[in-house]
Length: 378
Image (cartoon, rainbow, N blue to C red; front, side, top):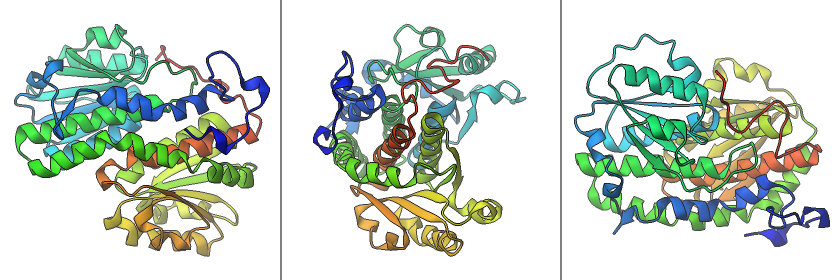
């Protein structure tokens, strides 16, 4: 908790906000505890054990997985896809729920759908699930709401333990969804024998300790607030990342759009040279995540092209890569953790950046215009 890092106005001492100015900031700071609740009891001696959920039978004979979600849930699924394919060696397709029903899918009998929805009532996601079930496909739901429609209609459900999330812009629900994605990836890898058991134990222990790394990342709040106050007047931003960082970039851009109303686009870093670089002009902020050591050299090469065109680079990077990131104008360091797990930590500075950009612009952070918490119409 980093309450001392900034001043609170007396008006912020409102019931339910625990002294924070807004629910969004409160919920960002609640992420370590939400993560602990979500992981509680599922990791034993480093190995994931989901036997209490009775979901392992869903994965028997599975040769393909579909992951479906909207917005933030879709971004959590992008991370899940990479983790499952890397560790469990199962092909994964991921789709935006609102488009899924328009596909003519050659359904098989050895497939599973993972549905991700914070509210459990997302209309597009519910429609995608019902489409899959028409063809006999097994469905596992990941949601935060007990007895929601999606939870009732799915074959099995894993509940995130994020607790009530009041702010429309999702923060703690997202990191809890990521935690579930990792639990599934680690569990499948162990069951299928596709990854070294000792390495899985280490990653499991690392996942248990991610709450501490989030707390460390929250310690960058004063730095992030100052950066936001320098750039809050911009109207265009870009977010970049490679590998696991690409999905985090998409979530960072979404948070900024939702709360600050600043135009934000996210691209895989390598895609920059295939068109988007034409939009880079003097002073345009480009936020990038640099956490994948094996990809850093290629990423830095792209960032130099941005610098040459006058773009301002704000990097969220792991401590072990700070030296490589000296080309950047602003650096927000986060703990160096296993590269597979970095999305859980990397997203936190981007959430804070979106929050302070919105606050500085005088926006209604918790209830942005035109948005609702649960999208119940298609």
